[in-house]
Amino acid sequence: MTGIDVHTHALHPKIAHKVVAQLHDHYGVKPAGIGTIEHLLERERAAGIDEIVVFCAATAPAQVIPANNWIMSIHAQYPEVNGYGTLHPDYEDWEKELDRLEAAGIKGLKFHPEFQSFWMDSPKLMPIIEEAQDRFFLIFHVGDRLPPEKNPSCPFKMAKLMKNFPRARFIAAHLGGFQQWNASMEALIGKQVYIDTSSSLPFLDDVTLRTIWNRHPRELVLFGSDYPLFDPVDSLEELQTRLNLPDHELDEVLHNGFAVTQKLGSKDHALSERDVHASGGLAGNF
Image (tube, rainbow, N blue to C red; front, side, top):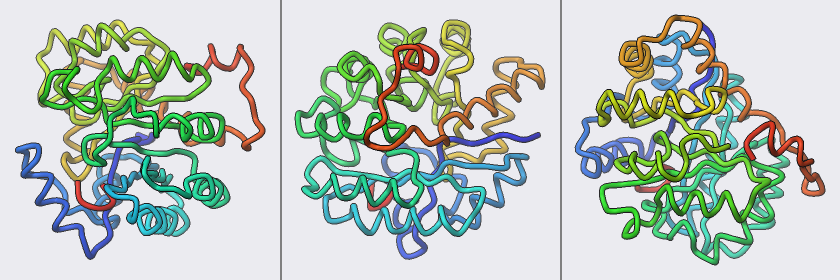
């Protein structure tokens, strides 16, 4: 088996134990991993996966530079790692940081409105998306236990971003909305947006899972484990078993994610209308 896990987190050794404990407190799930890059790669190899996308998310403006330094270091050190960077809406020098990330070969940005303490539709975020949309894939954590209108992120806010930035390559994590899958089916499923399978299957009933699987463009469904919360070996097995996928369909999902590791272009690049339709239009460092 070959393929890519598009949703993982590897933490600096100094904070890994702290973040893993906070994940347990927030989600009520005992993390399957210890959070280090070495353990992550070990578990991905056990799953037969040969590339990964690794995220960080600066929970405060002061964390942007050190978080990105960490991601750029593992991106450069490990050939199988595709690092995604981070920005915070309150970080003032974000244009320079976009240039720095792009020069380092970083292909995407991760945003987690809940842990970063901003709303997905914040006006402060809009200039960043405007500048980044032709240069980076943009993955958002979407959803949480609060109702969509009371939560910093939700499928409806994601759909609004898609409408306002039709060229952007968005990835809506957790099948479009953690604990908000009915809203995801209303606002996102069937639309031209990438979704990943991370932190979804253990919380979803079979009917909802099958409905999302049947309705969404298959090439836009990506495999994500959300390590260290979940182990990629277990996540792959659950995905195949719950959806009764033959091996070739599981392979297709595993290969879909390679699309979000490609270079979109320089800051002067603009997508053609054909390209848009073809591709779909906690504590520090998590």
